[in-house]
Image 1 (cartoon, rainbow, N blue to C red):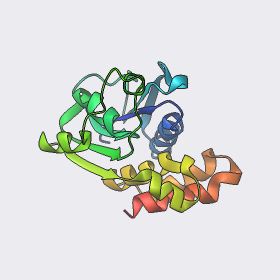
Image 2 (cartoon, one colour):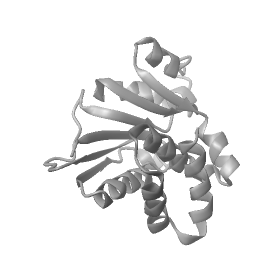
Image 3 (cartoon, one colour):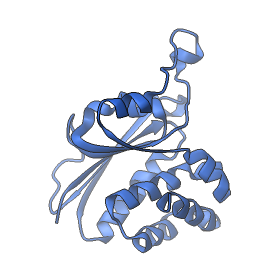
Length: 190
């Protein structure tokens, strides 16, 4: 049983907590010991949010230290760059291409960097980037960006599609199951 460290980053209100809950459930259902931790920070005000999902034969701590994440799932392009020090040298970044201006940019005190995903790729890091918002809207709800990214991550991690869909059906509100299934499929088949 191989261990895996997954860092999920984004901005408050994007669904990072649901994504981490689903990823944790998928690994628990596979028989792994799982620890999930979340850091809210200023999440209610659009601030940075990070959650950790660690799975393995025996996991003692929910926290992922710098240089330990096998995979980073990023809901916003700049967050990919902000949390990059936590990725292993051979880790993978799965990122939404969406840009959400942080407060310093909104207030005019800073500029949003040009093409943060391109900068990560230039550093030699494997990046799987997609317009998850467009795919979520295609599925029927802009709120399903998290599930699109989960689909992309599941494919990259070699997780069985049926196991993921079972976790989605067991976790999301019944009225959103169909949209979330479509969103997952769009991400998985990307």
